Length: 71
Image 1 (tube, helix red, strand yellow):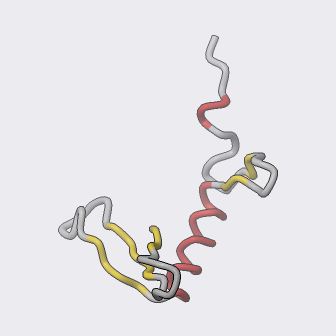
Image 2: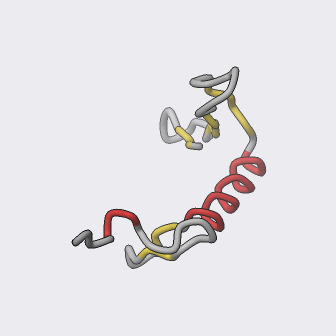
């Protein structure tokens, strides 16, 4: 998932890139609504960083993996 903008006055372009399956590696352009849906879905499942840089856990990811201390 991502977006790009070519310049100050250009329209924002949203895209998704397939990670597996027969379309692996293909980038497909999507609209803003689909981008918003998948972004919210990913944050709910895997977590995200809030405005202060703190990790907010998701359903599948209770802690930020790099913050685990292995003994």
